[in-house]
Length: 367
Ligand SMILES: [Mg+2]
Image 1 (tube, rainbow, N blue to C red):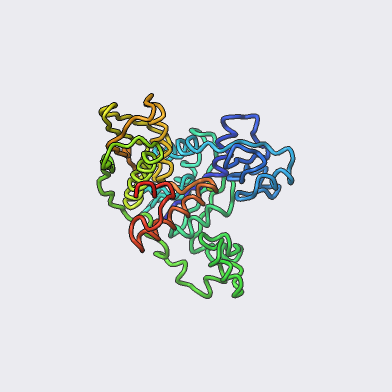
Image 2: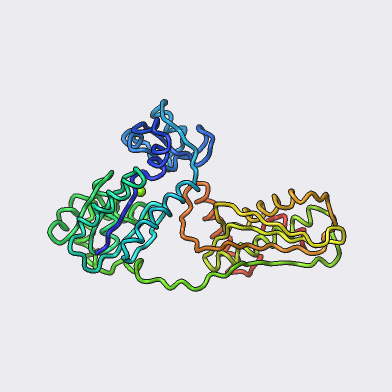
């Protein structure tokens, strides 16, 4: 059995706890701070009831409800809360999976009373964080996740042999994980409307192991302490653009290696060597870990700006990323999702045609 926990309107609920004035109000969380020119990345239940949903341009949301409350997304706060919930769930000493920032799965091999356990977890989450979660229980994660969605918010749903057919008959296909996009659209075109229609056509789809494996014990190979690249220039350089181009190139190289190992880094370190400055090294740690070369580059530039040197001659440059961890978060904000899609596309091109086949324009200055 899988117990799937899905937090209710997670980001919006966290903001409502912090600022009780927002409680029960229609509230949206914007990807960016500009109220009228961003995208809804989360909506409270009062906003959802008006037809406002994530992915909607904020302008459209305000046209539906001019009195809508607005808060700019604070990812660090949501990640922190998510980690606290994860730590709390660890105490149950059951195989635990971090499905996304607001979804967690526990595997119950043989629990005498899964419903009681689910109630206890829901109560504990509410007691500790003042927010609600919906829980679904079923024989595999696909059905458990579906179950968690059926009675939101604050829901508790068990799908077993006794209600399997009834639940699937009542549930439209797009509720099923993975059916929101093109695959679902294709099924709908071919006349399948409910999950039960899908079951009749593809009974194996809901089998015990279908899509499962997420909770199989993952072996975590050792995480390296740091990843770095450095380069010694043929002659000392004073042109800041050329120096920046090298820092960018080294940042991209480090970032590529982070992504290859599915790692993110919270600390960027810049090392410079030159005749006037000798060895200069400084680092900066940010709460949000990254494996985006541009972001690492930006962080190293900030380090350089603070070094109080004005255009020194540079002979060697090193970029190091440390405080490494596994990349487990899906990007939260629509801009970040687009950015990740772009980086993935660049990685695919460079994997196919050789590293550096496609690269940021500034790095041509290193040729
Ligand atoms: Mg959720």
